[in-house]
Image 1 (cartoon, rainbow, N blue to C red):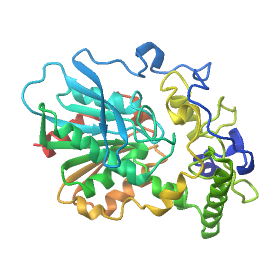
Image 2 (cartoon, one colour):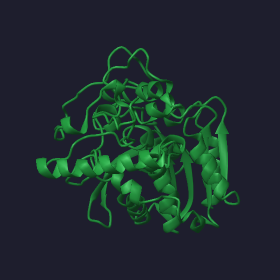
Image 3 (spheres, rainbow, N blue to C red):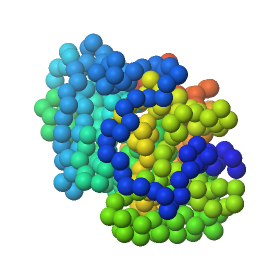
Image 4 (cartoon, rainbow, N blue to C red):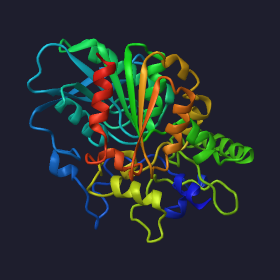
Amino acid sequence: MERRKALGLIAATGTATAASFTALPSFGAETGPAAGTTGQGKASGKGGYTFALDKNVKRTSVRFSNRYGIEVAGDLYVPRNAKGKLPALVVSGPFGAVKEQSSGLYANEFARRGYVALAFDPSFTGESGGTVRDVASPDIYTEDFSAAVDFLGLRTIVDRERIGVQGICGLSGMALTAAAADSRIKAVATSAMYDMSRSMSRGHEDFYTREQRQKVVDHLSRQRWTDAEQGAFARGSHEVPFDGNGDVAPSDRVLPKTLPADADPVTRIFFDYYRTERGYHPRSINSTTAWTATTPMSFFAFQQMTNLDMLAPRKALMVTGTEAHSRYYSEDVRAKSPDNIDLVVVPGADHVDLYDRKDVIPFDRLDEFFTKNLA
């Protein structure tokens, strides 16, 4: 149970009850990562990005609107020697990350290999629009993928019949959902996939009991009254944990400001990416704060894998690691559609290794998959 509570990022690392939540702080309240730990990259040393731009790739900041009228911010990565019409990929990062982190790293690598790649910030996060900040919607996030396809398909350098999607972590589930609903997406790959609807409504490895699920619903419902009365949206755990007494114990941060000595292994690997120079970014929710506390409500209502059968005959490739705590998500999705979904399990890799460790991420296999299925 301790490991499961940790995956809700339980408030042992910074507890706050619903009654003590405060209004959303303004952006910029926190300006630097936790000290004392080094990593693979430093955002401030790479123009605000956690990785270096390949010398053979050109990156351009772009903006486009989804069908709800929200402006989505992205970075377009194009090979410098590009000729003719190229295959293109929409690349999404982990849930709570920004385009300057993992998704940008993937887009940079794909562009180096000859793709036009678009990394984007989901609506309400990063540099994208949306009046309420740091709120998540599985519907609108799924729409963001299709809006990105719209954008790519209008580029003269892109072959609109060869557009695919690469999802990472929590946006991967919505990448699959988008592909099932939008046949313009010809192939989809995921890395360290999370089904956020399942995670928020069922808990890690579906450990919530029926009683606990009701407690989460009741907690979120009460929080709506608090938000309405205060005229502001509180922060809170998007994966609601429970304390030793069986009560919900949300936190107003995804990750602690400093890592406790007794932190569980899952918190440690996330901290090592988001809270250190390796992957810290001041616009990343995971690096600095938490989602709006009522964010899980829409994920209870929107189940992401309902229409997975509509993906066929198009193909998907799912990448996970032998040590990834999220591995079961990919295995379960693959089991539902073994004829058109392949699974690659990287030996020794944990969940976060697949964010940025280029010596671990099977880019050759991903390239092979997209080359074949975007032909």
